[in-house]
Length: 559
Image (cartoon, rainbow, N blue to C red; front, top):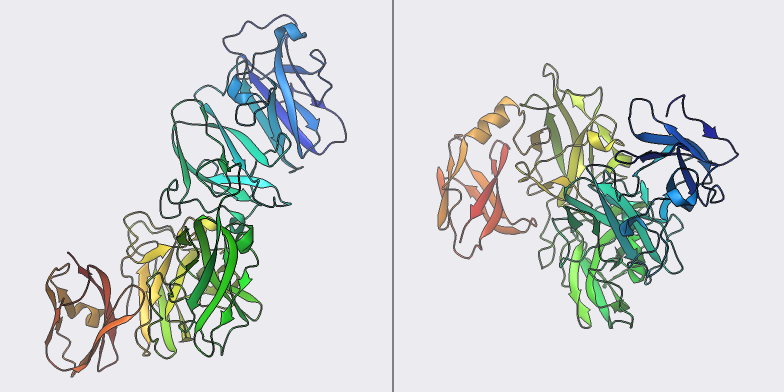
């Protein structure tokens, strides 16, 4: 604030600045005050001073106990006759909670070294140019986290620990009032303060790949309260429950002589709210793991599989799995990390993969002092197992790293420009650069690579793009000498080899990495790929020549 404002002293945990916009009001000779439960509801003792440089604004800084909901009103003068009339959407009592209380309210968080600012307009719902949005979520069917209930979304930077909601009355209804600009805003509720505690929004009211809630703000808005993880309010009567048998094929990920355990975790208390998970049982000596969970609430079951090894938890990639539970049911077998029904395809033997990231493309950021790769194939996964990349000699802005024995059939990864623990350093793929990535299930995207051969390969991309980056002369020459046309096609495509190699091995795979066709030791200059039984969709065409050079292309089959 400013030197003209004083601090109401006291041994409390939080400094709170209260600023009131009085423009449009005739301020009385007694000045402007605030009264609330934090100062004994006295309308004459807590003065607000003019804010220098902001005509019509009055404010002061108060020490207020943190971790509580305060109630207050602005006073034009020093008596209750000058108390503002608080708009209904901002009152503590509201139709969302069924209570009556016409005071303003605010939750004071516990960040003792930070100053909270309460910025209001006298007798109005929001500061000029913004609107009040009130949200409420009911956790009657959940065990509320000791870390509290939070909201995260585009309206606050997608931080699951930043915006705490308040439990204003008895029960498990949590509310928040936010002041927002016009436009569309996406969000989720968090039972805790981390993404592992976020709700799974049903597809009937979720938007985007990550199934977020969305509101369109054009005026003040009180959004109907919803049950955590639901599109509607919590039902008064118990909803039907069913048993669900979970099963998954782990044979494509069994790279360390077995697992310490395989678990399933999902939304809701029965599935541990994406927490510790439920241990599954191996079916004989097969790669299938299964377990039946009883008494799951009907509706949508949201879940993911994981495996655990040497103290590390390894989540499968992609969005949450979703199953409409309307009866006792069984999850169809899919490969770990895949959503294609059927067992895992045969994966090649462990192989060497060299990853290259290129910062020399148009619009690329300046490389930081250290460049990293993170992924699900390191031990531990992702940030905890980040591996630093090395600049290629004589190639400024181009970095590489090799892994000699990658085992999983499918890997997810991404490059980071600097500290891996700073989210903004990670690659950010806009809507025009997502052909090489898949959703990570928590609001972002990861690169994906399906291993098709045991021979060494190089995977190279420009930073934040699905555009091929730097490759060595021989690799670049080979990639340019193999063409696939027409592509897309609805009938057939021709694969032409102009590299003068004696033979080629060609493998066609679906998006799950399952081998659809193979052509081994093919010696002609062109290969006609007939559509035949191939369904419409995207396929990978992997080519390895007799000189052990490789290239992978996408083949698009249309209806």
